Length: 79
Image 1 (cartoon, rainbow, N blue to C red):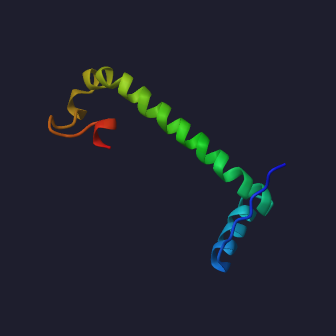
Image 2 (cartoon, rainbow, N blue to C red):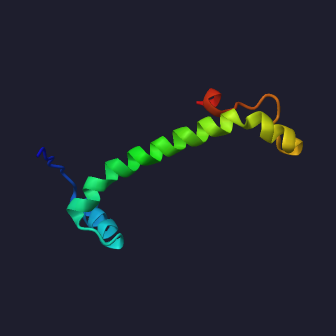
């Protein structure tokens, strides 16, 4: 099975150890899970942005007082 060696400063390693302990995980399991959780978070954010863009007109119609000013950038256009 592939593996990866990662270098941390003493302070960084202590912070990672503390975060792992806070989640009740071993250091190895915590570091293993981080990129997987980040991938899931990014997938969720992409879906949420897509959903909000799809339903923007419905929201604007239902809540006209909440509409941004006409010159405000929206969603992906702002990036």
